[in-house]
Picture 1 (tube, helix red, strand yellow):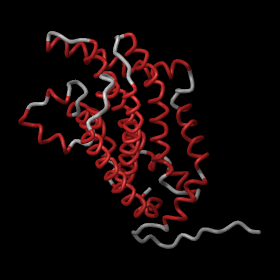
Picture 2 (cartoon, rainbow, N blue to C red):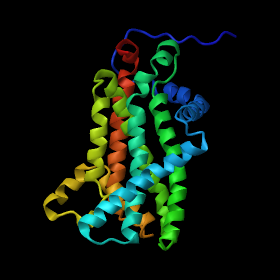
Picture 3 (cartoon, rainbow, N blue to C red):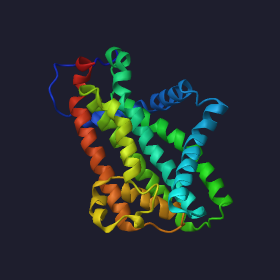
Picture 4 (cartoon, one colour):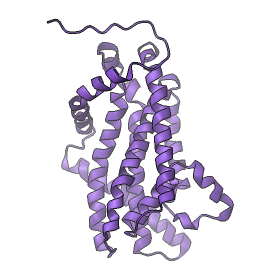
Length: 275
């Protein structure tokens, strides 16, 4: 029996048949995993020193920021350092999804022009790579918080839904920005400034409770604000997160994912022309 033939008609904006598209995507899950591993090896994360730098980079950054906070504020403690490090690690999960996803389509030009496959696999692979990078930092943080003397509790299992929300948000951002970059290539140059702005506007260098009353109304427009606040409550203070924070983060993550997916899938067949 001959293999089925895919016929691609002239581009017309609109969603593809989602049932067959998702089945095709699921059938290629092994390729996504292997493609992600190969990208990690290409970035030297398959070596001991590459994995070590993966952990040292955010740790050194948190140390520099902690020193800055100590110099400016005049005092700090182990809890403050734990908050800074924990939130930096989760922030890197999302920012790595963004930085990996922004050029995932343009960098896969040859693959797209020569092979028929769901293009969304490429930004998905960027998020999988970000997750692979995040996993060892999570283990290091547990060791670090033990050294700092922070207590443990069963409430820390709330970290699982927080990580899932962060992955959904990172995936949605990767899908959306990868599609935007096909049409506006300068977005890749602006991305470092965007991620740095998110870093400073999110409760990483400070606690959510430290924000002045004048700008508290702006918290709702930052998709990472309540997510990182919930993460800090769970991982640093070993408490259950505020349900409003979780709901706010989930709504943002789901909205970004749905908007990004619709935009991506409706324009996917135009990529080969744009590349």
